[in-house]
Structure formats: structure tokens, C-alpha cells
Length: 190
Ligand code: UP5
Ligand code: MG
Image (cartoon, rainbow, N blue to C red; front, top):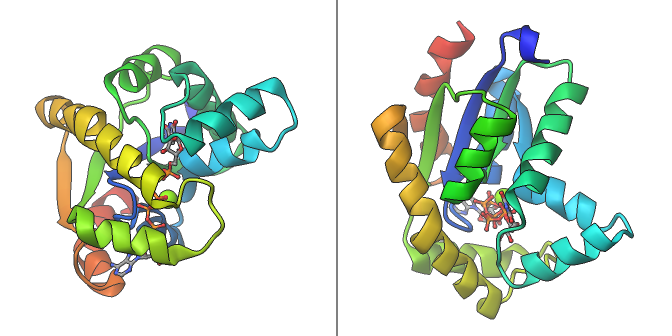
């Protein structure tokens, strides 16, 4: 897959900021493939293996699973795909994730899309989602926010020094958020 002139965009933001929702619209409009690290881990957690059980426990606690594991799941999905444009949703989330990604993949993102929002609104969205996720309860959501504030924000800050970070206000309607995101993708799909 490395020879395919890969284009990656990292999509980041707190729990419930709208990463998955906006990725679906980018897929429809710009032909990217959506790789959500959380979704890949949720598939793996049901694999019936010891690793699966470990992932399940960590997601329930809002903890970050070992970086190598997540990075390899993403790389595997990239190499299985015939696409060359990928949205990496929800990764990297801490400094170790970023360093491991640089080592095992070494693929730089075109840019980072950072969807912002207030904790109050994001919490409300996640609690209303009703998809049966083990981590969509108030206790786990608070832990997910803590990890976001303590680890993920620092990674975004780091990327601001070495790449382009586009910060988008996620506290608007889905269509209004997408209207701001859309022009960022036009130049990279030509
Ligand atoms: N919604 C969306 N946009 C809206 C808008 N503009 N106005 C009104 N409503 C809006 O949206 C959430 C809900 O809000 C939906 O109901 C949607 O309709 C509505 P969604 O698009 O799903 O938000 P998203 O940002 O994707 O929220 P998500 O909960 O998926 O984010 P998280 O980052 O918390 O979850 P993720 O799945 O990425 O990770 C889960 C766990 O996996 C982590 O806590 C961690 O334990 C583990 N993980 C790792 O260990 N490592 C990784 O690298 C990644 C994950
Ligand atoms: Mg999501």
C-alpha cells in the first residue's frame, strides 16, 4: 500500500464531537475510506481472543489500548484496501500513539482535522446515541474526557508545530460543520 501515493487525514476531537458523523459525509463526497480506530478495536474486542478481552476491559474504562495494537489494526486495514485516501478517526490519541505510528507506519497526514465542542454538549450527544456501546455511560464518558484533556490535546498541540491543524467548531448543525470541512478536502482530491 505504501507505493500507492497514500493520502491520510487524521480526524480528532473529544468523545461525541462528531468525528464519525463528519467522516461519513467526507466518504460520500470525496471518496475517502473511513478507518475509525475505535471501530477497529470494537471489532477486535469480539474476536473471542485474550487480546479481545483486554481491549473490552480497556474501552469500558475509557483507557487507551497499547499503541502497537491500534497502529497495526489501522495499517492492516490500509493494506487490505484498494483506496489510497484514508480518514484515520480517533488516532493518534496520546504521544506514545504518535511515536509508534511514526515508527511502524511513517506516513505523514495531509492535515489534521480537529472538531471542537463543549464537554456539556458532547456528553449530551453521547448519552443520547443509543448504539449500545459499553463506554456510553456517564462514568466512562467522564474518563474518556479526562484522557482527551490530559493526553490527546497535547498531541494536537504537537502537530500544530509540525503539520497543519484545521480547527472546526463542532457546535453547529451537522451540515454547517460539513460546510466548513468541505473546502479543506477539495484541494487534496483535485
Ligand atoms: N452528532 C454528531 N454531530 C452532531 C451535530 N453537529 N449536532 C448534533 N448532533 C450531532 O457523534 C456522536 C453523536 O452525536 C451521534 O449520535 C451523532 O448523531 C450526534 P459521533 O459522530 O459518533 O461522534 P464521535 O466524535 O465519533 O464520538 P465517539 O464517541 O465515537 O468518540 P470517541 O473518541 O469517544 O470514541 P472512539 O470510538 O474513537 O474510541 C472509543 C474508545 O476506544 C476510547 O475511549 C479508547 O478506550 C479506545 N481507543 C483506543 O484505545 N485507542 C485509539 O486509538 C482509539 C480508541
Ligand atoms: Mg466515533
